[in-house]
Length: 356
Image (cartoon, rainbow, N blue to C red; front, side, top):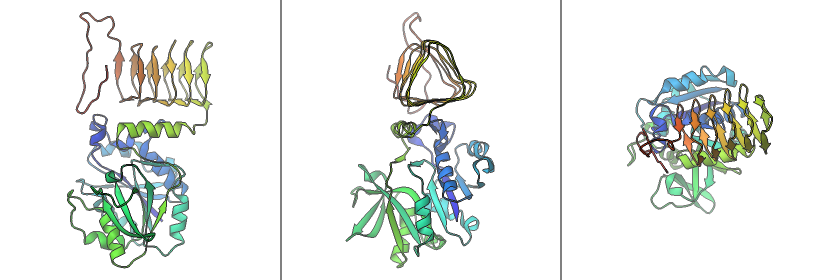
């Protein structure tokens, strides 16, 4: 069985972070979102994987994953020149898949518990497709399943009036017959070839399409608040570790991970769950609160940080309390208290949110 990870999309809801890189490389608990998909496929026994890249810094994806060997898989990169939909992206993989069954995993999804049991069930079934579902509060944001007497009868993409609260989570198990269905598609009202339409064709042809509900949590990390919530969920299951240096007078409570080359200076108070990357310099007299992920090479002097992701290579020296924030790479945050005349100095990109 082979795997496909979709690593494209414009990530407009995550700008300005996605102006310089794909949304799937934004870290959650100091690990790119798409790496969770890679690890799930590997754990399910799928080691031959195609990553479909788009137009946003595809070289950064290849730089991070390389040939896949350090993750225990083999990676083939394929380019989708235009965002023409999930089904279009899958269609690009026909020569890669050949006659094998395969799993499709949207690279901005994180799923507790992985997909191994679903892959095993699909491999031992006579199904031509299997979709994974989760009940959600806003089904109109997703592809949605419709049922009749407990039987799956229709899939519809982002309906204004959803027929149920059962969303497709963006993980599909498929057989090569799906390529025949994709060939017959016409673009939807969104101008895309929809995966829901292609699977619907299988049902219309009388082929067997099964569904399973995921039992753990699932997060689509398409918005900043989704990323922060996913960070909370992952950190809640963190195994504590310390590979850094901790000075006397530091207080650490709860599940905290500190990576190599990091120095935690005197007077710091770190409350888990929290993770701090490599080569960081924290303190003195700094509070790192729960649900905070600090990437590599970050310097923090004083102040308080809680429920926040700092991606890396940044300096925070403002003495303020920062909460519920997503801070991009290479950011510098300093205090304006001593500025005369008084005022804040900012350089911000498109779609930036500030609360000052």
